[in-house]
Length: 44
Length: 596
Image (cartoon, rainbow over all chains, first blue to last red; front, side, top):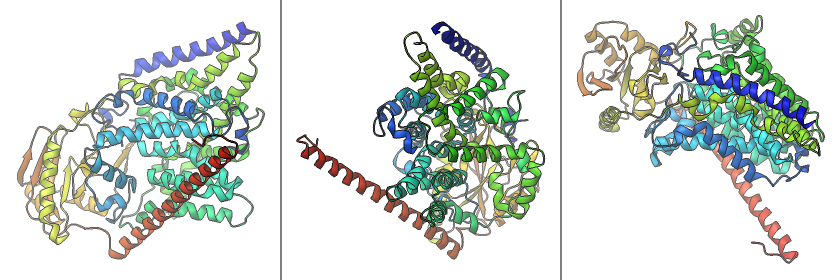
């Protein structure tokens, strides 16, 4: 039982960490409120 | 605090240290770079200044539409005592820690590990990220007060005699944060706190909520503004899909802000949004755990209403319906940023995720020790699914400081104000560029930030406060701004200067590094690398100096009533706390122990 639980939890952690972590660090260069949106302050 | 929540390990009084410690840890991870030294986070609506001079506008006494009333008044007073950069750190850190502790206390009867899971989910989710990234720190603070509001409201229902003072305090605190926070707090209190007996109790709850919100409500009612426009604003501020799973999937996991430019990259992933939605489902299943938390139905109703309000503009015909209603009831414009009103939905998830963690913890036995991994996963899942909230948006929020030019300009305006002290007239300054109220200063690495001039400089500072969203221009609601805009349209520097003087404008401040358009003719009194201040000469008219006498009296009376109610409530809380300690001491002495 321990093995099954560990495998499921490990899989979820790996998926979340890999997908979210990689995307977050790749997107970290973008300023959340960027100069290009200076006056419009919109999502365009 | 949920009534049945005190039965678990630790009881109602235990666990404060654990909750506070975990909350501090999360807050430090979120705010890290800000806390490492002097300087400010300046982005979006987050504007703190070294010293915020006192103005009538901070209490809504100037006749303009209140923006951050009365929070600006408190910040202004605080910056008279300590520097603004310290005030910013204290407010952000304090709010996050208070919110975390509140979430823990809301599920106080749960085991420590379950409370930690609830705290993490409440502090670390897409809603908090979106509002921090937009710089809406006061709205975030209002959200972080919600568990305290819910706890106090539940107590009013179950223990009316003892509950009211606490509810008054948290309702006033929420209203101080922002109008929308105040409204959400009142709605939360009504849903969670209304009782059938005595019959007057719901009306008393509503009346308490109204009095708590008077500091911003009355200035809004007496403001000399033009019509508040609702044309297209509900669609412009409607929640957005972050991934291909759609907007409802985003809202289901507390995401879906209208401002897609602040959405972190990971929220664009189907996998991440799906896993975050799964966490919400697990929390809802956790509500079925035993003992079942009391008040779940009310929390469910509150969450359903929150989700409906947030999703309504995205539903077919929803924005049109809101617009039609807004034409008849302009006050509905307060609902335009509907994503804000998703906040109370998070309250339902607190007992849910705590219940799920408690269930998982109760299944630990020989051969199933790995269930602790499930508990740990629930406690850190929000962090794993949203790493961008860590360390100042993974380093994108950097500290900055104001160039010395700002001090020089402030000194000139202060001196001019002093010369006018005998006439009670104020100094009016127009800020260029006249292109919306967000700036991209080079000294702030080009991040868009609300113009700090109205808060940093004394006197009446006029900025273009139109808002542009998705090409839609939300016009200014201030007639003075519209008059200045018309004067600036002339194009000829000399005529523009004369037109501005007729409107009572003495100075024009040019913020450098951005296209400023035509600068009116006048004497340059400050010309530094960041700012230029142009003196147009004596104005042709005295600028407005506050609202009319009656309006001013009404606003002050309302604020006084709220402050009185708050002080009485605080006194009652302190008195009961003191009485409680005396009773505890007497009990201890009767048992032969040492009260100390």
